[in-house]
Image (cartoon, rainbow, N blue to C red; front, side):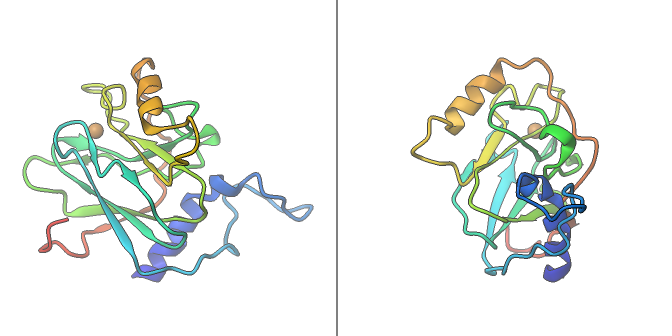
Length: 186
Ligand SMILES: [Cu+2]
């Protein structure tokens, strides 16, 4: 299961490395079949919707090859990658990772969303739910923030609050799978 997940996730974050030089005549978009990372076996769980419009923990430090796994509490959240500069909208070209919406009435969703960390660059993301303006109200997170940079999660949220309406992704990319440990909480 993990190997399959990793393959999908690699495709999901293709946009992260689209700036890397590619041999002449090859596509750079999402064409990452040859790019692999060695998985560490470490999973970081993040809960969407704990304590309101919030990802918990919202700031994760992860190694390359770690899995980030989002769980969903009520009501109807999603996880969508953005840039730091443009909060509450998908990465340009829609290349980032993106989950579907996960409607939940009680407990947590039976599904989780996973990606594999591909490099050390910060990964910014938000919830695209427009009912209640989740992103504008602070439902955003980061993986591997550069703590020596002014690009902090606080700054992202401040900019997010000034955006109008969140933009949903045009695609789903990443691994949406049944919760592998439904009896173990998060
Ligand atoms: Cu949300």
